[in-house]
Length: 422
Image (cartoon, rainbow, N blue to C red; front, side, top):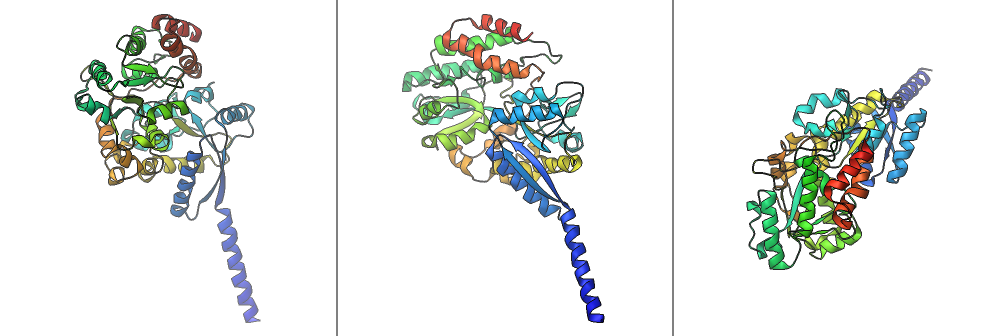
C-alpha cells in the first residue's frame, strides 16, 4: 500500500511539473516582409528562452510580400481583429499606422527610455508620436560613400582629401579623365540619392510642425546639384535600371561601372551578395560635407517592429522586443548576423564589432570607427501622416522628371510635388 502511495505521489508531482511547464510557454505571432528578419528574431527567441526558463516564448512568424503584409496589418488594426502580437512596418509606411489620437500600437517607452541616451535617438523619433515610441528600429541606416579605391588610385585621388562635395566633384573629374568611368550614379526612380542629401543639409520634406517644405531653397539647390553632376560636370549618370536595387544596376557595378556610390551602411549586404567581383576594391568613408565641419551622414531607411494593442500578451511582447533588439548582445548580433549598424552606439567599439566577418573581408576593417566619427552628425527626419505620399512623389516624379526626363527644372518639379502634398 505504501509503495502504491509513493508511486501515486511521484506521478502527481511529475504531472504538476509538466502542467506548470506548459503554462509558462507563451505563443506570440510576428509578421514581417523580410526573411532575414525572421531568422534574426528566431535567434532572439532562443536567447530569450535560455535566459527565461520559466517564461518560454514560441514565436510563430509569417513572412508576407511587402505590400500584402502592410495592407493586411492596416486592415486588421482598423477592423480591430486579426492583428499579430508583433509586426514589422517599413519606415515609409509607418505614418499610416500612427493616424488618429490613439494609434493601435503599444508604446515601447518602458524598454526604450532606459537606454535612449546610448542610442541614435533620431532613429526612434521616426517611429514616435506625442512623446511615445511605437517602433523599434533594426539599424541606424547611416549614409556613407562606397569608393572603388582602384579607380581613385588610378586618378591619383586621395580619398581622405575629399572633404566637401566640391572636393568630390573635382575628384570625380580626375577619375573620369583617368578611367573613363563616372564618379557615381544617381537614382531616378527611388529616393536614396536625393533624400539623404537634403537631410544632411539640415532640411527635410516637412518642418517639425508638419508644414510642407519640400520646395524650399535648400532642397532646390540639392536637386540642382545632382543635376549638375550629371549634365554640367558630367561625373555622374542616372543609375542603370533607375535605382540601386535593380539587377541591371548590380551587374553594372559588379563590372566596375562607377567609381563610387552613396547609400546607407545596410547596403553593404547588397555588395557582398550581388557584386562579388568588387571584393577588396571597395572602401567606406563618410559622405563629403556641404561645407567643412558640416554633417557627413544622414539616417536613411529602416523598419520599426511594433507590438499591437490586440496582443493578449502586451507586456511579454514589449519586454521580448526590448531584449531582442536593444540589449547589448542583440545589438552586436544585428551587425554579426545582418550586417546592420545597430542603434546602440555604445557597442560600436566592442571587440565583436571589430572581428573579421564577410563585411570586413569585403570592405576592410574599421567600419565602426567611421560610424563613431559621424554618430553626432545624423539629423532626425520628420515623419507625418503625409510621409508615405511624399516618398511616393520623390520616387515617381521628382528625380525622374528633373534628372532623367529633364522635363521640369528642379524648382518646378519640387513646387509641383509640394502643392500636391499641401
